[in-house]
Image (cartoon, rainbow, N blue to C red; front, side, top):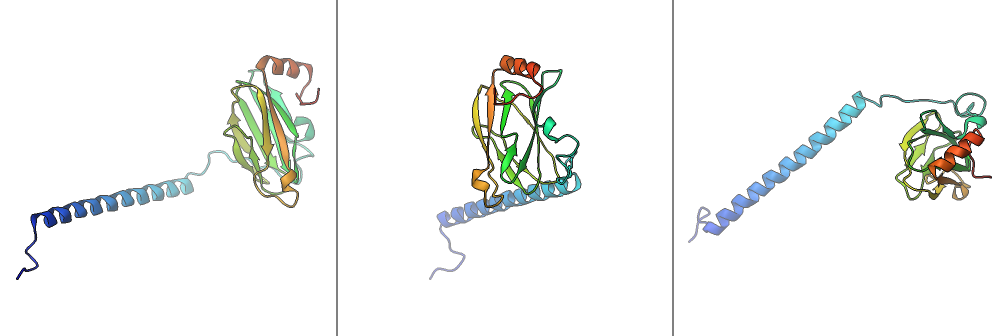
Length: 187
C-alpha cells in the first residue's frame, strides 16, 4: 500500500515547478500593486505643476477668451497659439486655421458644461472643463482638413456639435496672418 510520502519523481518536479510559477505570479502582482500605489500617492502629493482657471460666466467679457482673441495667432518666434471655447452646442471659432509643421499651443475652455475636444486623424483628444483652461501642445505634419467633433455628451444638441481644423502650408499661413490678425476659413 502506498503512503502519502511515496511520490513519483515526475510529481515532485511538477510540484516544484508549480510552486515557482505561483511564487513568480505573486511577485508580479505585488510589483504591479506597489507601482499603482506609488503612482497614486505621488500624483496625490505632487499635483500638476500649473493649473489655470477661467470664470466661465465672464469668458466673453474680458481676458484671454474674448471673441477678438479666439482663433489662431502667430507669435514673433513663429509659433502659433490657438484659443477656442466650447459651449452648447458649438465651438468658437467654428473653423480653426493652423500651419503645418509648426509648434502650436492649443488653449481652450468651456463656457457651460464638459465638452470633448477631438481632432480626428490626430492624437488630439482632451476635455474642456468649465472653469479650467486646457493647454495642449500640438503639431500637424501635413496640410489637410480635420473634423473636430465634441465626443463628450453635452446635452440634447450634442450630435450637432462639430468644428473643423484646416491645416495649411506654413508660408500661406504666414501670409494670411500678416494680412489679417486672425486667420479664418472664410476668404
